[in-house]
Image 1 (cartoon, rainbow, N blue to C red):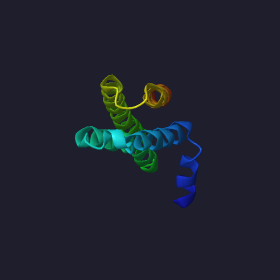
Image 2: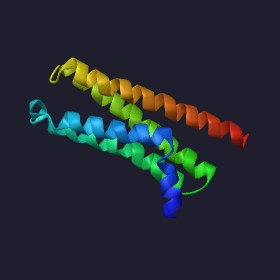
Image 3: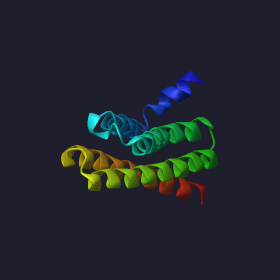
Length: 124
């Protein structure tokens, strides 16, 4: 099983999702957000959920289970995008910092959709 998990580290979508979770979490550590508990919590939960669901689906070992995990990760990713868009509009943090994470979010969304399509076509 450990060798299978190591293979997960070779999955670009998971690695990028890990970076997304890290960068999004770093945003929430900013002192400017200290009074925005609900937004911080929602960003953290959504961000951490993306790579976790990719990993869970992958570890379950079947294509349908992996697809399910990817779709849940996609939902969390779009939720994160929505929270980040609100954060950008609130102008509480430097615009470039927030948009860097939004760009990474979009990249992970595209990668996840591509992986879902690829795996779905293989099943057909």
